[in-house]
Length: 255
Length: 134
Image (tube, rainbow over all chains, first blue to last red; front, side, top):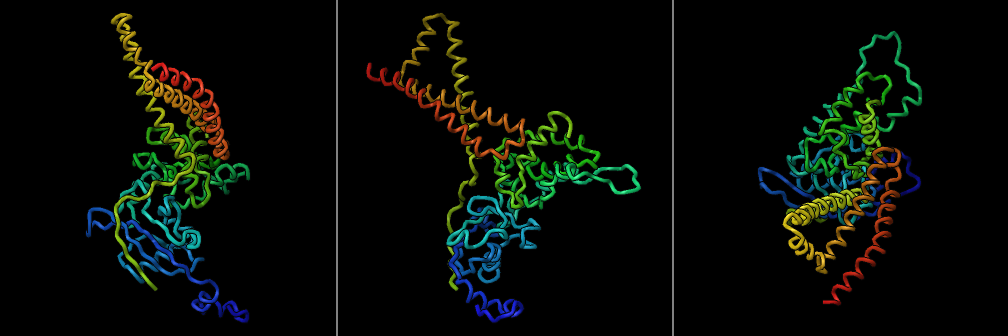
C-alpha cells in the first residue's frame, strides 16, 4: 500500500489496497446443505476459494454464493454482529459468521445450521419455536401506573439487568443447549435472558407473572447448567448466570 | 480463482462444548448406571425372602472378579455423581459462582481422581487376590 494515498483514495481503490496489503489465503468451506426440492437428505458441499484473511467468514460465504453457487442459502443482514441473523455452527461451535475472521479458521472451516430447530434450506432454520419461547415471557415493560414524569432508576437498579439488555436474539445460546436439542418445548436460554431483563427491572410490574411462566416444567428448571450458552453468546452475556438468578428468584418468589 | 466442489456423507462433528457439556453428559451416564445397579440390588436383596441359601447363592456373584470390577465402576459412578451434584447445587444457590465454573469443574475432577486413586488401589488389590486364587 502506497503511503501517499489519502483515506478516501484507499477506500475508492479497495482492490489495489487488498492486493498490496494482505495476500489472499486459500479457504475450504465445508458446508452442510439441505434442499427438500433436491433431496430429502442433507449433504455436505466443499468450496475452496481465495479470500482476504482479514475478511469475516460471512464475506467468504458471500463469495461462494455470488460467484460459485447461487443456491447456497443463509440469513444475514447487517453483517456487523448486531442484527443476529447469521448464527451458525462454525467448526462445531455456535457463532456469528460476521464475527469470525477468515484468518482464525483458515485453511478449512466446517459450517452447519444451528441445531434443535428444523432446517428449511441450507443454513436457514425455522426460528418460530425460538420466538414462541421469547414471546411467552412477556418481553416488554409492564407498568400501567399513571405518572407525570419519567420513571427514575438508580444506577444500582439499572446495573441488575444491564448484562441481559445486550441480547440480539440470534439464537446462538438456545441452539447450543443440549436440553433444547432434545426438547423444543423448553423455553431456552434466550427467552430466560429476555425475561431476566424485565424481572429485575425496578420499573416493571409483572415480574411474578414471568416467574410463574418460568417455573413451569418447560421453564428455567430444565436448565442443567452445561454452560454451552454462555460460551456461545456472541455478545458476551453471562447467560447461565442470568438463568441461575431467575431460578433463585423463582425459588424464593421474589425478583 | 479455483473452486472445488465435493459431496460427502451426512454426519457432522459433535458440538464442541466445554467442560460443562461433558460433565453434564457424565452426570447423566453415571446417574443411569447407578439407577440400573439399584434395580439389580433390589432384586438380589429381595431373594433373601427365599431363605439364606438362596440369598448366599445370588450374593456369591459378588465374588466374581469381573463383577468386582463393575463394583469399582459403581463406586466411581457414585463418587463422580455426588461431587458433581454438589457443584451443581453450589452454582444453583450462588449464581455468582458461575464466573468460576472452570475452577469448580477442575476442582470436581481433581477431587474425583484424587479419591479414586486410593479406592482403586484398595479394591483393585482385592480383585487381583481373587484372580490369583483362581
